[in-house]
Image 1 (cartoon, rainbow, N blue to C red):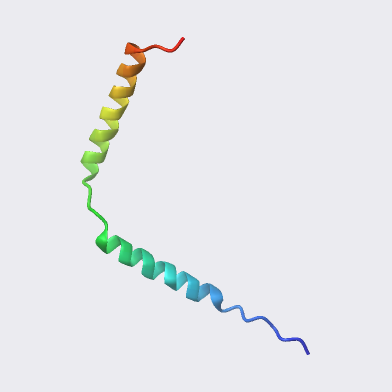
Image 2 (cartoon, rainbow, N blue to C red):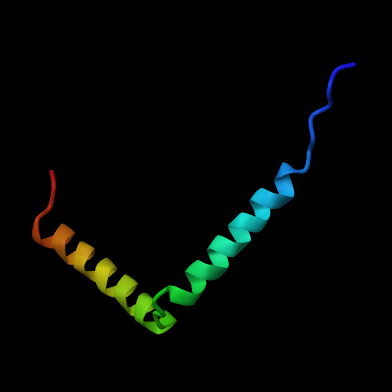
Length: 57
């Protein structure tokens, strides 16, 4: 008779991902959400000023 493949690998690999992401979150830098929003607005303003200052024809 042929051997059947074991299908237990999914849980172990998922558990490894959970350990990785838990470890990563503890050491990740904390950035305030207001700072991210302000940086996005500054970037938008800079791009719009650059498009006005140096138009591409």
